[in-house]
Length: 367
Image 1 (tube, one colour):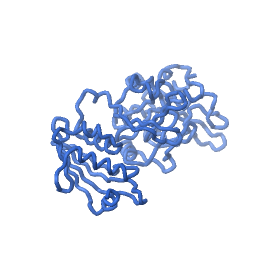
Image 2 (tube, rainbow, N blue to C red):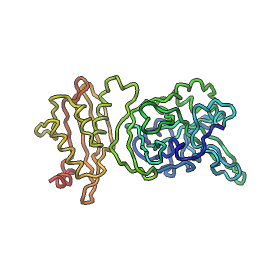
Image 3 (cartoon, one colour):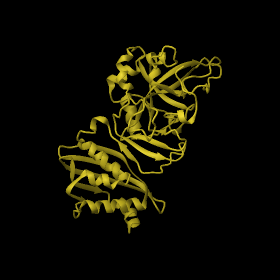
């Protein structure tokens, strides 16, 4: 069989989360499906119910499945003799393996917001997110029949690939999960089509690679998802030696502000950079950084939400809400619009327009 025995050192992609946020909402819109409130969870472990997106009768649908491909046919509970919550890519073409038939007839997508990988030493764990994107794991599913009720019970697994070297050597040196580009409609249509059996067309998917920038954060206990170090990024292969688009520069800038990564902020800005807020006096990059650091010191859970971002010929425009928690217990929520000029891949000017009345609590906290 194509499983590994259970155990902490074998648990690749052993936890993930699915939260209701703009990225997941966009995934649902692109795929033409809806998630139920019961599908949402900040911590999903093997053996738990998960949402799978699959095709039935020519229609895409979301079903609840058990995250464990091999169930006991009598109890319809996970067969814990084998760790079948993952299916190794090198076993997909093994005729005697349980994943052989599902890979050809019942593929699915498993939506997620983030996942956890372990180094294998029982103490080093990282949370992985995709920058400004939901995750669509490439998965397999099986159908089981509940003999008492006649209902169909779904069970599913996530396909895992060989390790990504050297990027993941200190994250998970054994494997990485398959992630499908859910915005590639041609690929998704074939992947979800139960009548599409030419799996040779999926061979390129089974090679480890980074197609979207990853945000990696070291955490303490996997079930708590508690960050213990600053995040870092693993960039997509196609962008490593290519200039970023204006929209990517915008995403990188605001991610850096969220993470208090001022070195990245400096790197994204041109010499002679100037900024101003609400048509007030211009200031330089170091003044901007000092202000950002001061805000980070008084605002917990600092983040941007409700983001609308567009590239322009001269730079980008972004609207968002600046959110967080102030020390007096009040919530920070400021509507802002940022207009940037970019020359030769560097930000030269930044103009921010904010709701001054909504910023009163922040001004008092900074005083």
